[in-house]
Structure formats: C-alpha cells, structure tokens
Image 1 (cartoon, rainbow, N blue to C red):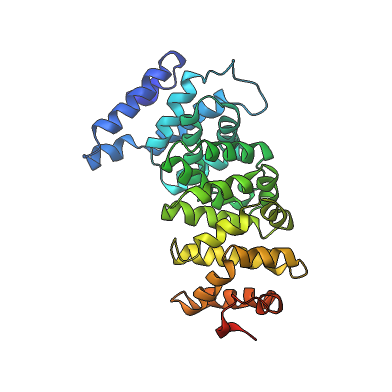
Image 2: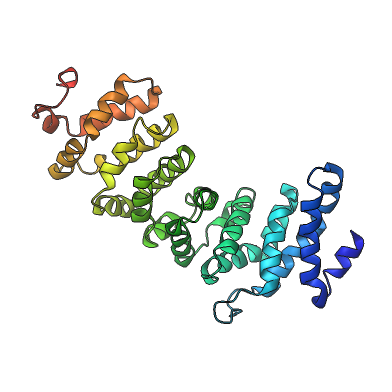
Length: 316
C-alpha cells in the first residue's frame, strides 16, 4: 500500500495507479482483511485530491466533449473506496467543500459521459449523508438542471435511484427546492412517474414531488402539467404504504391552496382521485395518512357532494 500511495503522487503514474486500485478491490472482494487494507482512508483522501486538482471550480478544464482520463479513473476509484464517515466528512468539507463543488461540476459539464455523472452523483449522495447542512446549501440551478437531464435519460434503475436519493438529501436545505423547480424537475418527474411501476423508484419520485409541492412555485408547476393530478392519484393504493403517504401528503398540499378553484376539484373527481381518497379512509393505511385523506375530502366536500358518483357514505 505504501508503494501505491507513493506512485499515485507522481503525475505520470497516476492513471496506472488508479487502475491498479480498482483491480485490487475487484480481485479481493471475498477477502475482507485485504479489502480493508486497500480501502485506506489516506488513499481516499489522496484520490479525492486528484479530482479537486483536475476540476478546479471556475476554471475550464474540458476540451470538446472528452472527459480527462484522470477524472474518469479517479471518480470510479472513489466509488469503490469506502472511507469511514469521519474521513468522508473531513475530506468533503476540506477547503470549504471543494470536493463537493468539483463533483457538481462533473455532473453539469461532462454531458457526453453519463456513467461518470452517475458515479459523481453516487459520491455526492454518500457525502451529503455525512456533511454539515451548510455544505448542501450552495448548489446551483445548473446542478438541478443536469440532475433532471440524467433522470430524463433513464439509462438505468440504479442511476435513477442514485439521483433521486441525492435529491432527497439536499432539497430541505437553503433555496434548493426553488432551484430544483426552476431546473424543470417537476414535469419530468410526473412523466417518469406515469411510466414507472417499480416500488422504490415510485416512492422516491413521490417523496421528491411532495417536498417540491411544499413551495408555491412547486404547486404551480405541478398544476401546470396536464397529467399531474391524474398520475399521482393513480399511484394511490398501487405502490406501497410509503407511496400512499407521499401521494396523499402531496395532494393535500396542492388541494389545500385550490379551495376556490372549482376546476381543480372537478378534475380530481374526474380522474378518480376522490374515489381513491375514500378508499384510503376505509383501507389499512396508517392513521396519519387517513387523517390527511379526510382533510382533502373536507377541502371540496360541498362540490363533490353534488355529484352522483360521490360515495354516499361520505356525504355531509
């Protein structure tokens, strides 16, 4: 390991050394003691420094659409190295979060290399799980635009889960909800949700939408999509209890601020949303979800009461 640490400090041996790291980890997957030796905290710190040095924020490092070989190898090596939480936090917060900013630049600038962008997102997910909140606040609109594009490409389930989990780690901080909305995330999520039936992916998409609809801009973007209400309503009682909770909470946020908008209440009835809400109240969902469902009924009860298809059990 000492030899490897020395080699990686020499520019002409760096790419070769990074490939050797990956090869050693892959060859020794079944040997826990050997893997622990390879996954050295000091090695992670050294490899991370290569990403930061190559990807200095604010300095153009890209020629055409090519990704520098050193960045490819360093980022993929970092994904295999698993430092302690303490080391990951220390390295990520070093120099005012320079590694975080460098990884964000990789996601926003290396448009032709989807694999490295997903790997960078995977690293950011792990980093955001351990760093202080202040390091999650300075993300740019361009970051969320790029994250949205990765989701839109739908290359793999793993990639989608990685990006969605990364979003869940940062949306509650600073102005990130507003930036994600500005980056066009909501309409893409609605369209992807309409096509996807995989439980965990749907849960995360609903959770992200629910967070974004806590903001007025998010609710406006949700209502602006012609399929928004129908898609979310269709997922109730079809995904999981977690999916039900997020769907009901999202719809509650939207419908709470549409009490004077009869067309929204009418649309919710026409797409089967009201029927789904009534089924939730009578189902085995948790009490909190049922209470939110009852609140939704109360928002437009006078309007829905007048329709012949409204369940008599819930008529006022």
